[in-house]
Image (cartoon, rainbow, N blue to C red; front, side, top):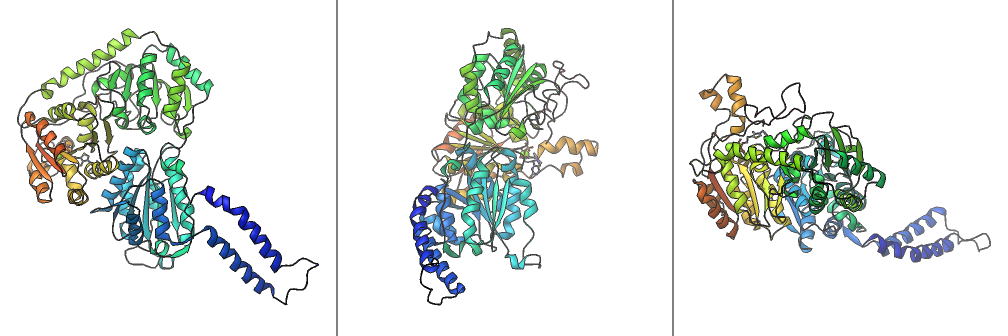
Length: 631
Ligand SMILES: Cc1ncc(C[n+]2csc(CCOP(=O)(O)OP(=O)(O)O)c2C)c(N)n1
Ligand SMILES: [Mg+2]
């Protein structure tokens, strides 16, 4: 039942109530009231009131209320680790919600995160009380990636709190670090209100996780109890963004004027462009105003890789040319970007002091890291549309664009050695080339972090508007379960996870979940049998390579194809680059989850991010800094 329905019934029922009250508490002229005491009158009134509540609020368990509400908010899958709210899970099943029971709470949170990002709508994950902190740890990535995940946990009864209850610690601090809204719900009557707020907070402004902590270690104090309950759903908050405000026209005019007069402007598109689904508008504005476009990892698929204005991904996990181009810009237009530490290589790319325009739906983000010449508060898609409607075509900035293109071409030449050959063991650059060529036009690429983020961010190209890219914001191991969440969100699209062996070890057990639940993802493992991104740091401390230093980053060479087969997946091993594409085809066509174990070069280490020479911010290329990428 929606708000509207409830409201429609109110006037009639309240009129009835007035009659009831008039009968019970007669006016001065009425006959004395049969000697009823005030208490008796109160009881009768309360009884009538309850009856009224029953008219509008059917009696149901908190479980039914929870299931009906999340179902009405469009939730098709719930990701959880038992033992949590089994009655609610039963009610969800009746409504056709798929229950994805995982092997760990972090994996459940990662699945809900990717599910939410792919659907641009809330995701749902749950855990019992002792798993709550694991779930909170899993929400770190959703928090960092601005993903609208609603998390539900059980909590030891209030009467047992602070009494050394079995398995119980305080949930408040861990969840306060990774949620926008976190509330304790002690009775089913409180659930509607907090659920509404959980969906509203998750989807509005900067989308981020929210949390409800239900009474009882499995939430039984709320879900197992029957009461007169109202299912309230506000469909607007069942998707992101619920509102699409347009920045004010004066600010838009000021921004357009600055962009017009800039000689060497660059647009930096962030995750807000992805969240707002503003790819077409971004491309159109860049072309109309003749401005090159760099993308954050969170917006990598929002600009065609082969477009003449494409700059690539700047920052820490970057191409040298992207950082160089940003250091040459005289104006940077951040769109839906936090201009955070990774994107800006710790606030150095572009250099501090550069002229900046920033557009964000959340006004608190505007100017956080770079002082702005013009701030635009609004939804990316609608504000870009307004900018398109009120701008005139720019004279092409031929010299600037040619210099940008030359930087990009020169950079490709520096990596060509690793990009083309069919050597054994395979170089990660070559693996990415094969994936760029072999990914279907509607594929979703899900990338783990560390080297996986560097390789996919810099070496993998998306050329089709139907391709998507989502990436881990930092928690190694996110990739495999996240790909499963993405597949649940888009069952008809091929979902390919790119992870390292260090990454896949974290949540390998979820392959069993994938088989059991029929979630057919493809996991490509860049298997160099090591955490090789850590190698340089370790050897620098040891003063060179030794058996002891090797212990800090090397693994046994394991056969992930056989491990995957043992769980019911298709397992493939690839040793030559020329075999990658056919393996990918076979894996995508398989009617079950698949793992491709790609044996790669242990020397395949990414270069460190390019940065301007010390003390000379904004200077042109100082050459590739020596060394390797930071973890
Ligand atoms: C939860 C967590 N712990 C530790 C790290 C640090 N870290 C980043 S990349 C990395 C190594 C990744 O190894 P692998 O996935 O095999 O890729 P490789 O470096 O070998 O190419 C580590 C340990 C992290 N990002 N997240
Ligand atoms: Mg590795």
